[in-house]
Image (cartoon, rainbow, N blue to C red; front, side, top):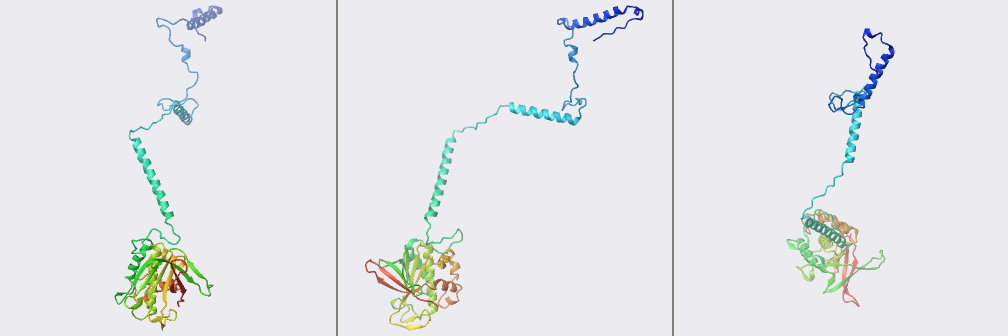
Length: 369
């Protein structure tokens, strides 16, 4: 750094060497002043003036109203740089900030609520196990059940098992009437006669092979008896219409039994027709000294019976009112009754077993036209 001095015109005659000496002395005096100790009386500046001069042009300060952009820097570049700096500062602050661990408050009733919650879980698990046990344990290959929906019938017995057979017999028997009077009495029981078990033996036709089938499984036995004539005979003349009505009554007894009693077969013994026997094939009356007893045998392993059990009773026996002998042929369910009972009519007789204490019910097929 050099200091220039204005030299009066009258001093222009001074030698040039003397002028150089004066400049050198001034520069040396300025350099010495920088290394002087602090001025106690405040005559020397506190800061070195040289350090106050900026070495580069400052960049724009974002967010400051009066801060101009730096030289050669556009406003877009300034804003981008400020955003980057702010994001860096925020990330650094978040990284440096300590992680706050939130400890849930503890209640003195927590143990009670935990106990009650555990008890509810245990009760729910027990209910699920019980439901599974009921569903699995209640399955029976001989019973078809309906999904949730309308009831299978408007009436059902209050007693389950074979003990409910007599309740079903009483209910169904009262529905079938002739001339305002009950057609026949109906009794129901297990497959027993005089307290002894009954085994069912079905004779096959020659076309079927001629074998004898012994039926296993639980079953019920219904017996229809007329009380207005001798020997359980029904009053009046036998007819095809009356036989169709008896077949309908037998079908209803069997379907109730399969649905609610859990049995696999039902035998319904019809009342004798009297001295004038009805030929089921021709429908003609014949006189005979002995009248064979007819019976109907229903089994749950027959497809048509299974279908009738699955569907509500009103879809099989669709008549809203039980028909009579005079109206049964015109009943809307006459065709269903005929289809479900054809091939199930037998002539029947009881015989005693040779060794076991019991009876054998022999059933010989009777073709129906």
